[in-house]
Image 1 (cartoon, rainbow, N blue to C red):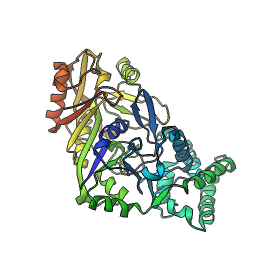
Image 2: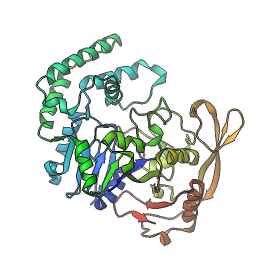
Image 3: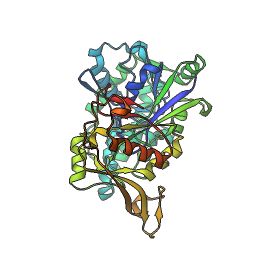
Image 4: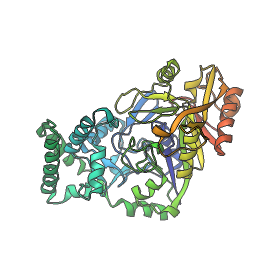
Length: 422
């Protein structure tokens, strides 16, 4: 059985958590393949809002096995908080949650380094969530990081201290004041807590699942335009957020990838610093933010808002091999008289292009928009395509034509049932 991949096509916050939860009854396994606690996957059902940071979004389905893959960086303290918050839902974590031994651990000093690096950048801040993600991935690439399998080794504390000593030297060189002792107490308590969970050789287990014809959904975090290689570098996250990341982040061969679900909002948002060609710094952008409740589910930071960007979507579809498009938060645009879509960019040399240039920040002069009629109708009650007003059906058709790909699902609200399969 193939591994289907679900990922975001924009700058993150597209609504992946809801869709994993919606699709998961069709799957036996849900596996997170990259990112860390900077991700915030929001699910809403039975009138309750849930925000998951590291735990896969299939966790609320009792018959689904959930993996945290080796492409993830895991914060033990945040993991313990997440588990404790979920205890009231009577989830059998021993049965349903498995953590790869190869998953990297975020240390307390990684979080301190994250804050120190961001502070040192002055006016060139990346907009980090300060969760220690970047420093943890940096140690992984430098071949000195610590993994979950290390916590059951007899020399764990010695190896931990050797790495922390290096971090302390860096922090001192950056003249960053810190108090490590209380952070370490929480950390080691969380490490003890982690030892009671299923730490497994996940690459063998997931490949056995494939051989056993289990249906597997690989769940991405962040968005394609934040990919460390193909995103708006350096204003990106520190992992591979695209389809290829599912292979390296779970130990799955490329030949085993099946469908690729590409999720996008009916407009665009971005958190933190970095280029954003269609950004609206006006009342329209503020209206999108307010109606869409566009505030980070992890940090609470207000998201920057703008119109849909076709060249950026084309790029994300290309590098991911997207087979189906899923549109989220269409209802946020219900009250707009006019909706706009960016179809091209004017570059600073005067040329007009329909592709994403190497450097969005220095090469793009302005976006080129097409204006369409707004639908001025409440989409939340729609149950099928024929319930959509003509103007919204035209909006869907325009996007499909521009992208040469079908939209197979539209989300019209945060609840599970506010989802229309086309």
